[in-house]
Length: 290
Image (spheres, rainbow, N blue to C red):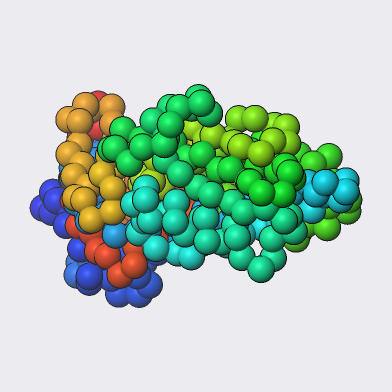
């Protein structure tokens, strides 16, 4: 017998266990889903409460080259916070000039309006690139991108030759997802690509008990993904998602009797999103499959 319930409203404030990042919502009654029916995500609403720099992207790695030929790998842990472009530049500059620096020069981090190193610094809103300069000592540095960091050859050099701190090549937790550098060689100045402090361009909504494990993605965890919700706002903005209405955009339920829904919010890398106690509301509709 099919339940008369056609809509399931999930409010993460009322999870029976867990939290908004990973929690379980318990429905007061069993909902029967007939064989010709499926679930549709009708809407999702949430304040973007996650930080621009959090546990998943706070590691900035740099290779410092001294004039005497000594090279050292250095990992800088950026303080977790909701940064804007200027405050992150200030934080990065302070951390680069901390006591663990192995070169004699002084780092400066400025905003520029182009990837061209010759462009003058500017504080205008269009200055969305970082220029890092090491001056006063004649030394050079390089900033590896994620492809290099994930390379076993680079990792050997980093840990063995350059005495850098070990890290997980499969989960880099790198700031490169916000800004990275294309020049693979040592230099006194490096200019980043476009700085994008929206650390989450999309929210991947996962469920371990609905969806039938029918998704595929870059990580094994993607099998439980039931929806991808675009996020085009920065910290404090409102994420609004409304279902497309396409009848083929449905969730094939893994069960025909539904009482509990376990939901997770993950990034594209598969990390749980730390919502900083932020909450969300999503609505599922029970309807006929096409």
